[in-house]
Image (cartoon, rainbow, N blue to C red):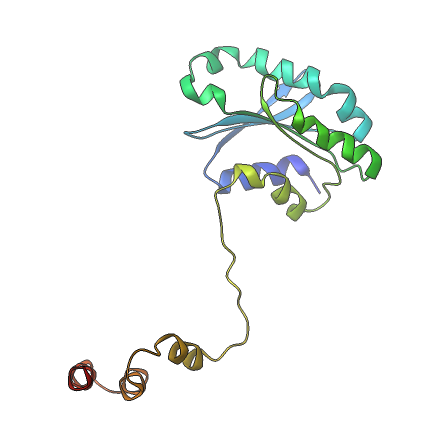
Length: 176
């Protein structure tokens, strides 16, 4: 899986403007919206990430310094994202500790990124809140009747049937 491509797709779907910058250590996906901006760096290994994240963060900030100076309040919401597919659990915890470094940018650092779902979970704090509906086999009529328990049962039956709106209104008016 191409982590760069998946990250860019996800960010674009979340209404970020994205572009690629070829940094000194390789490609960087840059992203920005009205509230924040940031840079996604992908490393082949946990060791490479741990050894180079500070330099990559500094290089991205230096390259985009003019834009950051003109960004106003948005300059307080700059993210550096560091991702790797490496699944070394011991190194993964070291990578997550990068997020505790509050200097220069806010940070997201994750290892074991191997699927599109992993990319989404890693970038979750940058995405708008979404609720996934629980879809499954259910009896719509029973659920609706349960929710409409304060309405007379004959009115609910009329509503769910072929009864005209005028007749339903008459039933509701007669029972109130």
